[in-house]
Amino acid sequence: MLINCVAYQDGKRLCDVPVERISDFIAREDCFVWVALKDPTPEELDLMQAEFNLHELAVEDAHHGQQRPKIEEYGDSLFAVLHMVEFRDGELVVGELDIFVEESYVLSMRNRNQQDFLGVRARCEREPQMLRQGSAFVFYALMDAVVDRYFPVLEILETELETVEEQIFTQGSARANIQRLYELKRKVMVLKHAVAPLMEASTKLYGGRVPRICASTQEYFRDVYDHLIRINTSIDGIRDTIGTAIQVNLSMVAIEEGEVNKRLAAWAAIFAVATAFCGIWGMNFQEMPELKWKYGYPAALAIIAVVCGYMHHRFRKAGWL
Figure: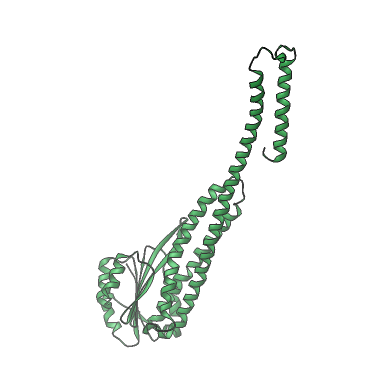
């Protein structure tokens, strides 16, 4: 679906452009066209390929989708794949933003994501002095918007981790905590898979040999890289904390099981003493004088009760009961 198709010249919005006239505007000097699509159909993508003369390999990747974050050069043009991560109904959902960039155009295609980039377009149009740098600045603004949207996701993950950490030493919650930690670890890995490849790819856009289109905007892409470094470092910190929390919870499970085993062992010892006395006095040998004693039965019960009571007292004092 076509969202916008706008021509810009000298940092200012020129006009909305009909799709069939895109090729006319990109042929002008100091003019570029910015087209935004949402979940494009194969027919729309083929039309854009014809209008912009897109490289067939990049178009093939855009057709297939589900690409790893990357930035690739095709002659004077760039093709970038960025993952858009958002929380939806408590689950982490990953969309994709494909960007085709050349000096005369920017084509952005959003797939499987509800977040729009109208704010990015408005930002660029509010800064004509920056927009004069052409399509490279738009490319930066789109990348910057995607990366900035990782921060709220990171904050939610950190909040979830803090909530679990507060319950680590709550009695009986260890197994539930481990399940929540593994679910959180899966979410963190989703964000990691979006950030780490993009961080590596973005190093192509500043310092040393960079694509000609990005030569005048290197410092902006370095700023994006710095943001990615911060996010990646935070992700690694969360992963380490999750690993530690899992180990602590496993230890808590072992401690709880040990407490149960101690209680079982204590009661087993108490009943074993009673069983031993009953076994001795239940043998019915002829030469057992206490069997014929008038107070033998009450005395036997009293002895069993006293010994079992004493053992119960000792176990409670030792913390086993």
